[in-house]
Image (tube, rainbow, N blue to C red; front, side, top):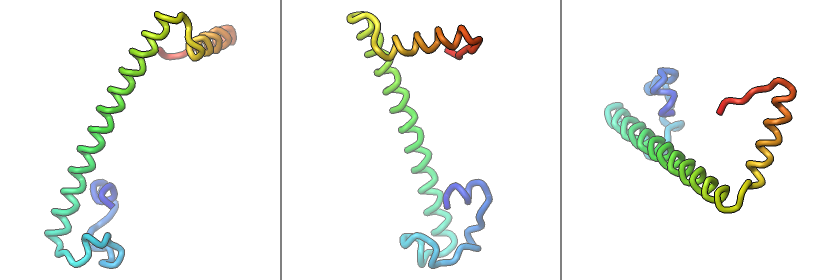
Length: 97
């Protein structure tokens, strides 16, 4: 509902009171607007936090892969990726790095 309201695909006044989440039932229009704004901000913060954590995870995994490759030589996944890229190159495919 928050997304639909932000994209102007839904009008809050057109939503039946019984279709609203229980937390919003019985609220007046101003309270509903404030509630939705609060949830929207909370959602934005959570998405930002998820994005930051995903970035940190990717950096960590990349670092660990480099460490492992340096200490043990080629890893199975890097060997498979190299083999697939070599075969694809023979067939004139290219990959973005």
